[in-house]
Amino acid sequence: MNYNEIVEVMKLAYRLKVQKRYNHIPRIYQESVSEHSYEVCLASVLLADAYLREHLIDFKKLVRMAVVHDLAEVRVADIPHDTKTLFPKFAAELQRLECKVLGELLHSRDWSFLLSEYNDKSSIEALIVNLADVLSCKVYAENELAMGNTNFARVLQESDCRIVEIKERLDKL
Image 1: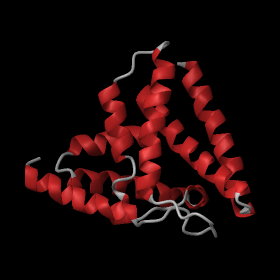
Image 2: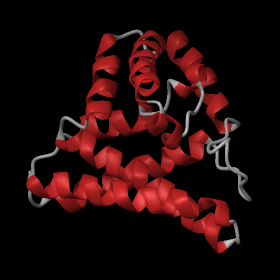
Image 3: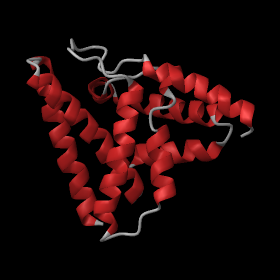
Image 4: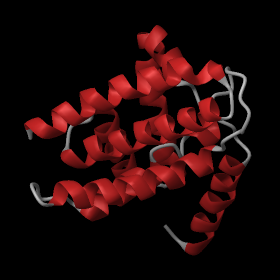
């Protein structure tokens, strides 16, 4: 990518600062996709350090995956996990669309393949970034509950179940 293309991507990514997550649940604090993405990057690096003792981890791949895991949402919006669970055909089509959009945004199919790997949880890096993603959801839900928002009890419960599932997969590697 050249400088001007990078500037255009940055302008698009800027929109993620105002795009709110959990748009279907009443919430006290409105977390943006950008805030969530930062937390996923931070947690990915910290988790990778923890798993590095046992496995070889490609940090470049991990960080790239974490940084762009929700970037396509500038075009397709943030669709909550429970919606994707209720409508698996929609979720599969959304994943395909997000991979296509990401490749177009970043002018390379390599990014599409990286996002596909994340979606498939087909590498240790993808599992770690997925764990970081769910950990961010868990922390957000815990904060909403601490402020008295009981609407997030189910989000917390689902996050805890997903964390157990991903950690079990990581432990089997």
